[in-house]
Length: 121
Image (cartoon, rainbow, N blue to C red; front, side, top):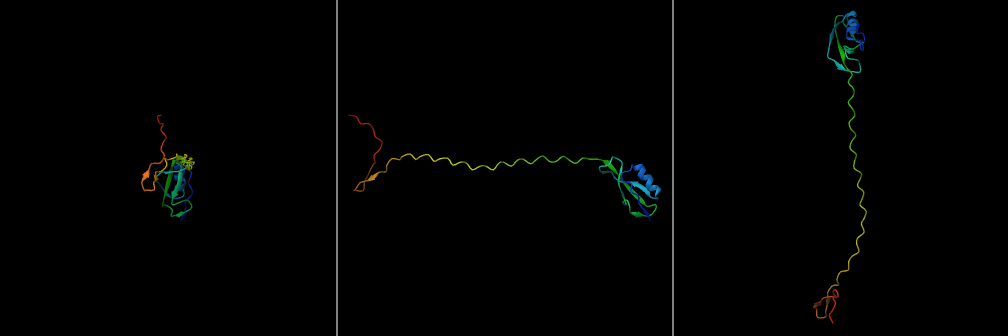
């Protein structure tokens, strides 16, 4: 069994050379996004430090390049201010209502004093 060398960060050609010199066959897998430059090796499978039989296949995973993180989402809309309780409006003074009708002793009603109208002489 031979330990697989760490080739991460190397160019594909340098990684291939180091792995073949160690006695492994090399294949290239799919690209993966990383902080490494495009084409540099991100990782191997089996991983670096693992032991494998001489002549076994080690797959390289090259970098597809750096993809920056997406921008942060826009700020959430502001919550509307809690509506303030409306100030109590003063109740208008009540207007005097005409006086109620008055009952006579005989049970009949007579109208109360109404608006004064000028009388002719």
